[in-house]
Amino acid sequence: IRAAAFFKKNYLFMTMSSSSVDEDISAKRRRRNPAQLYSSYLSGSSYDAKLAEEEERLIAQAIANSRIDNRRDDEWLEKNVPFGPTFYPTVEDFRGDPLEYLEKVKHEAVKYGICKIVPPKGWDPPFSVNVDCEKRFQTKDQSIHRLQEGISFGDGTEYTIKEYQRMASDWSKAWRDQHYNALHQVEQLEVKPSVTAESIDEGTAGTEDDSRDTTDYSKNEVTATSAAPSDTHHCSESNVSVSGDAHGQNETCSRQKLKPLMTPANLEYDYWDIVETQRYEIDVDYGNDVDTASAFGSGFPISERGRSVNSSNFQCSQDELPEPEFGTEEYYKETFWNLNNIPNSKTSVLRHVKVGINGINVPWLYFGALFSTFCWHTEDNYMYSINYHHRGAPKQWYGVPGTKEDADGVERVFKNYLSLKLRDVPDLIHHITTSFSPRVLKQEGVRVCKILQNAGEFIVTFPRAFHGGFSLGPNVGEAVNFASHDWLQHGVDANERYRTFARPSVFSHDRLVYTIAHHIEELLTPDICKS
Image (cartoon, rainbow, N blue to C red; front, side, top):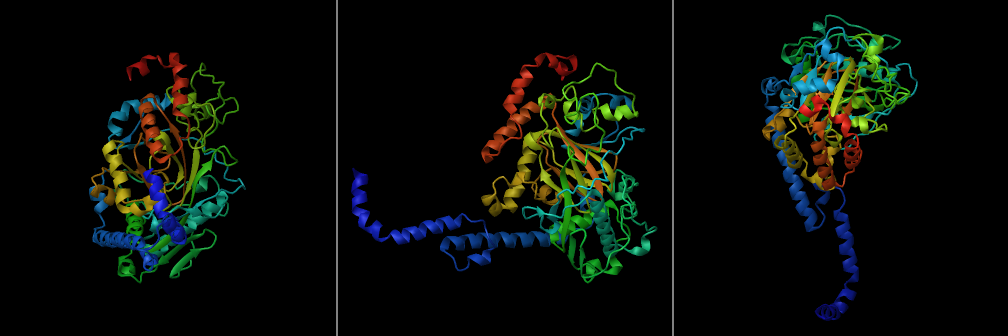
């Protein structure tokens, strides 16, 4: 009754004010638009003025942060970011299940969220990628100087493998010529006119410690020999651009201050200098998430015993046969250290997922170039991941432990620096488009480590462990997920986390657990029961 009386009393006013109400509704709708720079709000409503004031405050804070960072010394990363653990399994370990080996070292590696595994002497799998394939793959155009802004990557140029190889080589050589003293370059090598699997091999490995590594990563077969100097360098074939003080107009880049060699430590400083200070505007094409089930193929040979989802006889496993001898041609096809096979190893619960899911139980290829970036992220469903570096220049990795405290710390950094962006994109942290330096994370109390991955080495990440990094030059890598039995609880946590964002899971966790329960007899082995 009171509602009816209120409606009758105010009906005339509501009718007369219908136009203003419509205007107010449309104004509210306008407020849902993505946030813009504060200058666009100056003539808007009082609500817009509040947004402008807030964004202006955030911009002022960002400027203040950048001034602090500009006063950092060149050795900050070396002094304050420890190296993650590296393990050296034996030939005997490589004859067995990689998940069983990881169980031995997990107690130490999990403290860092990431670890490196160096295969034993004699490990030399064939490089099986079809480098002569004429099919093109799509790349992502990464603006390296804007990686802290959380912006989406646009589509880059499409390349064949050989075209991408040449582009990445040209780009590395151009950066070297512009920022490193040519007088210290002992050797100049030309790009081979016909790019082969061998020409992608960088051929020189770094040491465990970046600070002691004096390898010049410009001196290899994936580096081009010509680059036209100009204030803004554009590589038309590569769609890579650099603008700014590219040739030393700025004091810090003067010819007298050019660094002598393109070592990992020097390139690491270059990279974070670009990301944090925007000294240069750099765009790089990154060939990520390339399907190995396509014409490009995997870097590893395909199993003939049905151990890979891509095997023609998948689900017809011949596990009763003896394991091939280490180092033989058959071994590289059938070993579970082959990334096509590890999701279906005897102790991986993903073996119960009987369909191929790209990037989960079917590996993805990654074609990298200098400064191409894999931004901070966790794996889908908080799974384990394993990355193998097939060929080329090293990758610089960073890892954060998978504890709730550290994971919450990373998310806190996103909220502090990108609060307005998160209003429009609440699940931004899952978009893998944002990169903050270890300096920023450590300021929030987040533990960070780093690892340099050379060709022929594995990187393993653990459940809920944030990780990211970038390439030091042209390279080819491959990655896939796997899950041991201790992952199941992490999978539950991931599902609950996704629920808050209305984000779908890559596969049904409940169905997987249901399937495992119907194969319980396979799990009742002494090793699994003990673990």
